[in-house]
Structure formats: structure tokens, C-alpha cells
Picture 1 (cartoon, rainbow, N blue to C red):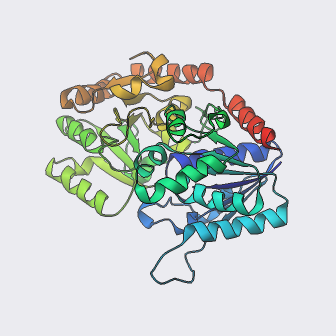
Picture 2: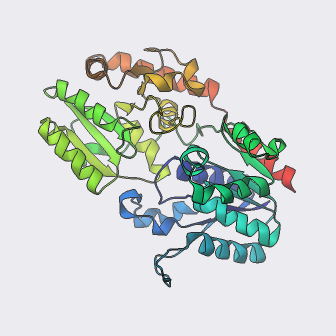
Length: 396
């Protein structure tokens, strides 16, 4: 098939961007042609992944071509970057040139709205996928609601969340469009055989315990709770690697760490592209994903971290929040056998878990090995890709 993707994509950081990358790569490897249209080269510096010049070709794996809007554009009055119009225009050119069979979009704003315009102009089959924030925070905004309803009404198939049907019923939309595809982790990419990142350039010794955190600095992800817990063990031999954003939030976070006298324990690494994540995980002692409950940041049941599952696939012990333990695949894990669980707002509980990892290295490594076994039993990446192929085929 010739598939047109309209979505977040590296160097935009985040889960949707990474999911799109791995999906496009896998479909390309199966012989499909994937043309990705994004605004990825306009992402703000604080949310931009750092990609070395010699790795730029990784953005376009086999049978995948990337087309992005350009930071250099003709401005309008009043000022706007008019992403929807520019993305749609590029998409129209690709449809004409490459005989596109189906369109896929992930995230309603701006990508779904761009795909809606493309659908109206070309009537190409359209698979829409939305994020948790689309169906909650953005959908409730009166200035977006009507166009989002139009997206759901015009798409041929829809991949959503548990509350998507409820929202569609509320607005008299056809729920038979809902499609099912269980996202999974590629165990060949996220593997114990990943080449480890070299942390020695940061002055980290071989015996030092390395806790690694991926993601933005936020209340949802309990970033501050993590560093607060680390302050109770600041005399221990450990480092915390934050693969995170730059800018004001990072500077405020560093000031907080400084007041706790743990700033010297922290190492900040810019966001990295998806293909570098396994290597960072491999070189780490433990991956920390302290997110617990979505509320009050997002409605319950609309967010679950995939970073923890990726780390488990690499064979690393992972610390997750207790709220996450009750979600999705994590419900089937066993504490201190293949996962580590904390109440992130309980400073003593959190710091005790960090101590456990440092003082029981052999046990922590065993938990990591068990985590990989759990992944091998539960992650079905080939099934996920096959189900996506089947959905696309159903559109033709």
C-alpha cells in the first residue's frame, strides 16, 4: 500500500511521535510505502530531539519518506503559523504524486484537522487516531469542539480510548467506525542486546547506580517527587539522568534540586530520537517512571506511559507509580518480581525504593531479566502491525 501519515514525528519528542516512527518503520519494512507529513522541523527548541548529523538518515527508514513544513514561511496578519493549511497542502501534493491508497492521522490538532481537509478535498480513505488530551482537554474547548466532531464524523475508521465510544454516542456519531489495534513494543528494537550509551563522558563510574527518567518535567509525571525522594539518599553513590526538556521549566527544576543539595547528582540530556532510547536504557541501572494517577491533569483512563514497557523489554528494572500498576498490561506484573512500584507522593516510600535498587543490585538485575521475560510473553508487535495493515486494507 501507499500510505500517507499526518502526525507528530521526530524530532518532536513524546510518545505519539515515537509511536508514529516505529509504526512507519515497521510498515516500510513489510514493503509498504509510507509518506509522513508533519510540522516536525518547526518544533520549539525545548521539545526538540537532538539528532546528530550522521543519524539524520534514520528519520527515513526503508520505504519511509518524511515531508515537513519549513520554519521559513510567509507570515500572515494576524500572525499565525497556519499548520493545518500548510500540512494539508503538502499532503495534497503527495496524494497526486504517489497515488496514495489511505490516509492516517494521529492527534487531532493540527494533524486530524489537516487530514479532515484532505478528506473533504480528495475523499481518500482516512483512519483517524486520537490522543487522550484530544478527547478531553481539547474537545471540551468550545472553539474546537465542532471541528473535532466533524473529524470523527468524516473519518472512515477511528482508533481511540475507552471513553471514545461514550463521546461518539453523546454526539450521535457512528460507533461502528471504531477499530481495535493493541499498540505494542518492538522487542527487536528494545532488546537486552541494544548497544549501551556511553555515560563515561559524563564522569559516571562503572559502579555508580544510574537512575534514568524520560519525559517532560510535569506534575503528571511526578518529576519533582522523584528529586525530592532522591534528597533523602544524597550521600549514596548514584546519578539521575534526566532525558528531558530545556528552557524555563528545566531551570526552575534545577533551582529546586539545588535547594535540596542534590543538583550535583543530576545529569541533563536533551530529548533523543526513538532509536537512541534503547541504548540509554541499556546503560542505565533502573528506569524511573513515577507517574501514578492522571487526575487532576487528565481524566482517569486516558494516559499510560509506554516508556516503562520499553525499559522492561530492554531487560531493565523499572519503577512505576502505584496508579499505573493498575492499568493495561501493568496489571499483570508482579511487584518485586518483574516491576517495582511506589507511591510517588510518599517521599519515604519512594526513597526506600531507590535505596533498594542501589543496595540490592543483583536482585534489581534479576527483576530486569524477569521484566524482559514478561515482555516476551505479552508484547505482540507483529500482531499490532498486522492489525494496522488489516485496518488499512479494510479501507480500500
